[in-house]
Structures are given as C-alpha cells and as structure tokens.
Length: 408
Image 1 (cartoon, rainbow, N blue to C red):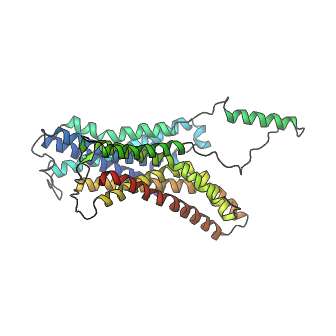
Image 2 (cartoon, rainbow, N blue to C red; image 1 turned 45 degrees about the vertical axis):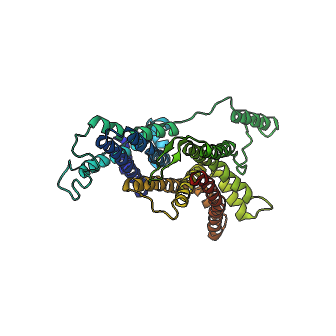
C-alpha cells in the first residue's frame, strides 16, 4: 500500500518512466508469447522454436536493464530522514523499489497477454480480432502454464536485479577508506589544532578510475579473434539471424557477444578517460569543469553509453551486411529491434537525467559564485561533444570489424 501511495504521488516524469518500463515489458512479453505460438503451430520444428526463444534474450536483457535504471533513479526510493524515522531505511526502500518494478513489469506482461489473445481471436469485440490467428496457432488451446511462465520471466528478472542493485551496502570498517579516515583523524589530533578535529577530505580530489577498462578491452579483442577464427573454420554450425540472414556460424555470433560485452564493460573507463583528456595540457575553467564532471559521472553514464554503442554497432553491421539486398524482416524482428534500441536510448537518457540531478548542488553553487549560465551550457556541450567524438568512431570501428567475418 505504501508503494502504491508513493507511486501515485510521484512526479509526472517519474510516472512516464514507469509507463515506459511497462511498455517495454509488454513488447518483450508479446515476443515470448509469439515464440510459444510458433512452437504450437510447428510442433516438428523444435529447433526453430528454441532459436526464436534464444533471440528473445536481447530484448529481455534490454528491458531488465532499463527497468533497473528507472528503479535506481526513482526519487521515491531515496533515503530521507522523515522516512527513516518511521522505520523506512535504505533496506525497506530498496524493497519498495523492487515492488514498484515488479508492478510495472507485471502490468506490461498482462497487457501483452491480452493483446496476444486478441490477435489470436480468443478475445472479441475490438478491432483486428484474430488478425494473426494463423501465425499464433489459434486453432489450438493455449497452454496457460507455459504462457504464464514466459510472461513471468521479465518481472521476476527485473525485480531480482533491482533488489540486488539497490540493496544497501555497509562500509567495511577495516577497509582502505576507514584506514585513511583513521590516519587523518590521528594526524589532526596530533597536530595541536584541537582534540577530536579531523582533517576534511579534499572535495576537489578526482574519483578513482573504474576498473573495467582492461577487462573490456580484453573481451573486445577476444571476441574479434573468436569471430575471425570461427568464420574461417570449416564445418561450423550455422544459425539463422533475425531478418533472414542465413549461414552465420554460431562461433561468429558467440564472438560478437563477447565483443558486445567488452564494449559495455569498457564504457565507464572510456568515459573517465574522456575526462582525463579534457583536463590535459593546461585546461581552462570550462575544460576543467567538463573533465571533472565526466570523471564523476563515469560509472553512472559510462555503462549505458557502452550498451548504446553495442546497439549502434549491431545496427551498422546489419545495414552493411544488407547493403544492396532487401532482407525479409518481419514484424516480430522489427519489434525486437525497436525494443532493444529504444531501451538503450531511454536508459542513457535516464542516466543522463540522474547525472544532472546529482550535480545540481554544484551547479547552484557555481551560479551563486557568479559563473555565467553560458559557461555551464558550454561545459555540458563540451562533455557531450567529447563523448560523441570518442564513442562514435569506436562504434564504427567495432561495427566494421564485427561485420567482416559475417560478410565473408
């Protein structure tokens, strides 16, 4: 009940994000149900049904990632003193965020089920009754248990992921931060400046760089190597990609998956590196603010940037492979592609809005100190331009290298 009241009293933009999560869950649930309909209509083609179900992994992952990002940026689940006083600490708020995610995804799954039944002709009285009866095996009874199992995939996965990401993490007293704080306290008390005084931390100190860049580069190189080796190995098992592209070795697709994972892992490190580049060689005030801002936001927007680069490289590679040819892209392939691309863009936009809110105090302080608003707008444009200048060519290079084995 409390989660419902918090949801009802949220800002319209927050409500829009939840509705978008429900829409993404509805689209993914509909794809899963269509896979079930194909399996019912083609009982002898079990391999094709399994392959269609495997291709639903990308929309499921994109939807879950978007749902987790929306849950993390939900202002209703941020710790506040008033809620802590009534027993709603960080742990309880993380549970509320997981419940809100489950409600939104379950609503989308129910919409997908109703739309699926409507296109099968099981529900009448609306336009397009039974419009896809032949494709969705309308002549056979729908196995309710299998349908509900498929529809529960997205809500359960998104809820578990949200709970895992938002769970409170207690600082270890024996860690490096505790040792540093203790040494600073000892130094402050021994300096004769007053008992109990602790040397404050430097607010201008840059954050530590993300640790995923070496692993991301290693996975990127390994994926490209696997693609090249698999494309040249004779007797490789071929898979049919969405859109009718046949003859694609399974090893090539596995290598591309490694490449995509490496690019996503390298996103935060590359964003941090962009901040370092901006601050190099005697930076001015604008470059210094832009670079330090990218370093602070590297973990928040770096991963969505990497995922968007994965989607962009896949789209560019597909356009390169289909150049001069008219692929047989059906409505389900189009829906899956739009779901993955839309969730990637919306996740990055949500992370960017979260980053803007996170630096609102710094922006207010700069304005109070007399900084012109034009300089702040120029700083934001400089950050965006630097990221585009680094991630754009990288996406193009990865797409070209990934498309070479498939084109051969």
